[in-house]
Length: 108
Image (cartoon, rainbow, N blue to C red; front, top):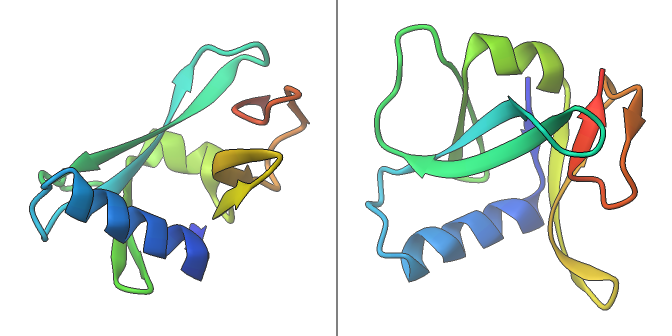
């Protein structure tokens, strides 16, 4: 499972509304190569699901992840911070063995 905090869900809903995305849009969570630690998280809005995608829903927001990415983000919690130390989505990933200082890339 991938978890989304209530604060992160509220921000996703706000972004969907502000970007004029379709209401049925969902948040696609991916892991891609790159970043200073080897792998990076990628979040995007999507409307097309693949047959083998895993689907989760929290606070009215649907999250979709492909099977390969899911191996790296299983049991991850996605939160949102808008404080003085920076604004953005944060990934609390128990599978990450090492992450960079900014928290946007990791190795597993």
